[in-house]
Amino acid sequence: MKEREIEKDSAYLDALRLKRTKTLIGVWDYLTLNDILKPTRFKLSIPLINEIVEHYSEDVAILKFRYRITEKIQLHKIAGLMTSLIVRYRPVIPLIDEYKSDREMYANELFAIIHGLSICGEYSQQEIKKLFEDEWFQIWFNDFFYLLHRRNHTPESLIFIYETLCFFKFPRNIASQSQQSE
Image (cartoon, rainbow, N blue to C red; front, top):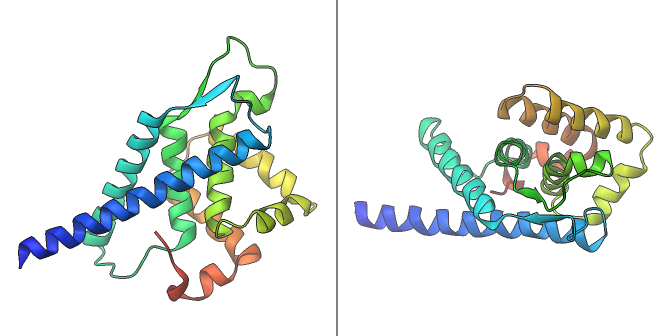
């Protein structure tokens, strides 16, 4: 019986790793294809992406065991955990000697925030574009950059930031446990 549980957990974690990796690479592709980050000036480190995904999958396994979680983890929690790991491991690597803009200096923070928003918005580019149209959002976005780059934070504090955003902009993610993803 234990072997079947291990196989089930292993298959579950493999699927989780694949999903997280695809999402990270998808966000990178979005940022480079839309010329938000230039691939001639930055590259995405696949070894660091693998480290992020492995760390995340370990955190998920520990959390599920410790708190006896049987359902999937809420989207804002995924966003907060992943944002903290992206900022910690910094997978966007500069290929340059000098930054030309704040966007370049904050490339990992940009990657982390867009990734978190993508998760909260259930991977909808339209949902994310709507956020950028809101008058308050640019202030929020800039403040979040500052927090991630200059201040101390915990994964839990980032979870609360995304949770608050979800309450106002993605309430369906908060309303039901059945609409969760890992």
